Length: 292
Image (cartoon, rainbow, N blue to C red; front, side, top):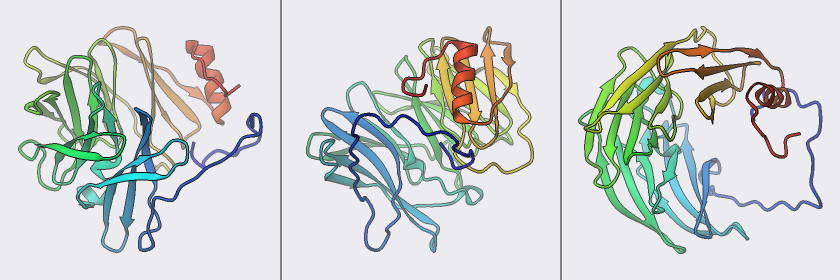
């Protein structure tokens, strides 16, 4: 939740809650926000970003955390990254995921993907997959997303969409979206689709028989001309519906995909997070535990 919306009602507080916190910064770089955290095998895994505005650089570290005490068990620092694509400062390592074997896949500097394994006590950098042959200099990785067929989809800030073999890391293919930029993460579903929002359109991609990405449908939208504050888009999947909500604007723009070729754009005026949840529940039967 961003600071865009006014909070007019208190949320449930639970029964005698206790708060634990931990500090992942340092004396020289005190700001190290945690952007992703997952739970696996009795440990929390987080990605913290140490930024240096003076040099316009950032270093992402994978952090292994005890879930009971929040003590740091181990850290793995990724290579330092520099803001390159039109000055946009979102490190490639800001997002990662764990595959079915518990391996971490994370974007890194110089358009590379790191494959990292872990135990209860530490990390091991196992492989590096090089994407410089399809992501041009000055561009960088935006997000990684697995599908349900053994492919790793990747996107770049400059509008490149590609696939890797999830076992070998081999590059299978890529597509450029001319004149378009990608500023958000992506989503996949069990039918094999990968859903991406560029700054001009929403897409569904599917991997073809050779594993190369192919556009299944494209739906342009009016992106507006003003600059939005607050977090980027939120994507929710429910059966065959895809939604993208801009937190900083009092409007939810769901897209209902009745079939692969003709998504229908729906809009609902919303002013608070609670209204957003109610509207989603009313329209689509979604359940939000602990919200109401």
